[in-house]
Amino acid sequence: MAKPLIQLKDVTRHYVNGEVVTRALRGVSFDIKAGEFIAIMGPSGSGKSTLMHIMGFLDSLTNGSYIFDGRSVPGLSDDALAKMRQDKVGFVFQSFNLLQKSTVLNNVLLPTVYGGLPKAERIKRAKRSIKAVSLEHRSDHYSNQLSGGEKQRVAIARALVNDPTIIFADEPTGNLDTKTGELILELLAELNEQGHTIVMVTHEEEAAEYASRIVRMRDGMLESDTSNGHRRRGGYKK
Image (tube, rainbow, N blue to C red):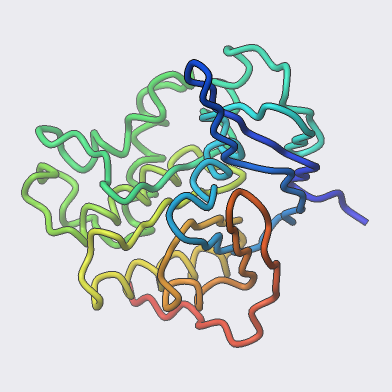
């Protein structure tokens, strides 16, 4: 049997500010298999974003074990973590995080800059990712000329460009209206059905319906971990 892509065991994260200790995570344990679509839910302060940042190598745990694709993460050098972020992970954020005065193509190209690939190959990959989110007709437009939904599709294309092992989406529909948000969720579900592993942080029950599994957090601890037998399937039309 294949080992899980992610294995978390008794993970804690404490932030210390003078004499004040904030316990963001309090012994979290669970596994993620390749090909899953997981929604992490919980109220503000529950630890869901902290957990995602640790899994995505943006933050470090205080105690516990984190194994990613067979490799123990705690103790890795900054360079090794940067390499894993570059090669293994794609990020999609609520605020899109696009360069406003750059074109769609150049925004999607950004993660390829440090990969050492020839420019022609980088452009080929970027165009392939843009096609995957049906934005070929907007490749030469600047991101400040796009709608919110288009910006998030650019962000997803950027997350895909290095063919990551996993995509982390942090409140990907938080700045979108209901209809546009549904289109983004359908796109994520479609990508999952194509084999991409997706972990999405959300506070929206409707968004979590697209996931195959729902992990609920409260007060830095795992409250529940359930399979979603009634998940909504991707119906994104290219």
